[in-house]
Image (cartoon, rainbow, N blue to C red; front, side, top):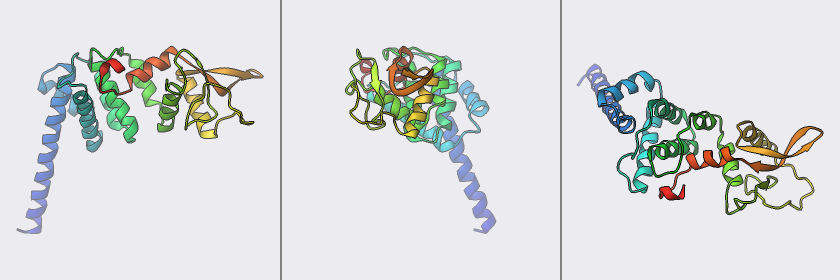
Length: 229
C-alpha cells in the first residue's frame, strides 16, 4: 500500500468514526427532546458541530451513567429544546470534569420527573458563570453536615476545607483571597448574601444562604436516588 493509499484509508476510518459518533449523539439528544432522529441529527449539525467531540461524548456518558444509577434507562420527562440545547452546549464546552459532571446532573435532574428539580433557564447561565472553586465553596456552604439547614448564618473563614456554623477563634476572620473572590461571585449570582457590612461595604466572612442557592444546588447535584435530591 502506498503512502497516499494509507493516508486515504486513515481519513476514511476517522470519518467513519465521526459519523458513528454523530449518530450516537443524535440518538442521545432525541431521547431527551422527544423529536425524531433526523431532527436530532440536525440539531447536532447546526448547534453542536463546533464543540469538541471528546467532551460531547463524556457528557453523554456521564448523563447515561447518572440515569442508570437511578435505575432509569430513559428520561421520564421530555426537556424543552430551549432548556436541553443550552445545557448540552454548556456541558460540551466545559473542560473541567467536575463542572461537566454538574452539567450532566442538571440535564438528568430536569429529565427526571421525580427529581424535585424545577426546570429554570436561570440555572444554565448561573452554572456557566461558576469556576471549579466556586462550585466547591458553594457546596461546602450548603453542606447540611457542616451547617444545619435551619441555621442560615455561615462563617467562611475555613473555606474551601469547610464552612462553620459558629464564629471561629482565629483573629483574622477573612477567607483567603481566592475564596473571597469566589464568594463575591456567588453573591453576585444570588446564591449567597452577605451577613456583615463595614462602612457600607459587604463583608464575606459571614454569609447567608438563599432560596435560589438551595434550589440551584439541588438541580446540579447528582444522587443515585432522585428522592435524595
